[in-house]
Image (tube, rainbow, N blue to C red; front, top):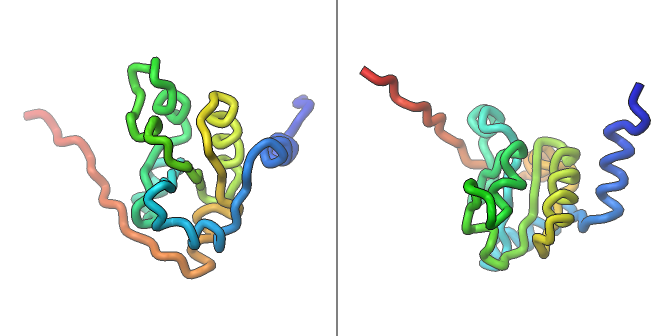
Length: 137
């Protein structure tokens, strides 16, 4: 039996991090000092699309991509921009934002309600093409 569930973990995360509404994110999405980060699985992006201009950093690799000492480091996370993380519904992004905040990445926030709330609010969506590796001949 677990002693703490996902609801409690996410509530704790939201006490530690900045949570932005969809409207707040829409107001800053074009700021050159802001980068939206979609942490959903690539299959979710292929199926549902993403927010135009958002970078994709899958949840399972996020800490590795943020850490400059990791062989998987992505330089975009050293840009000094404000990173706003989102997932499908706002739970994974709360935990992800808490994790990178604990690593010292700043400034960071997450979008309440995630991609679902973005779509419901009429936010723009772009299709993500499935790029599968070519078979070796």
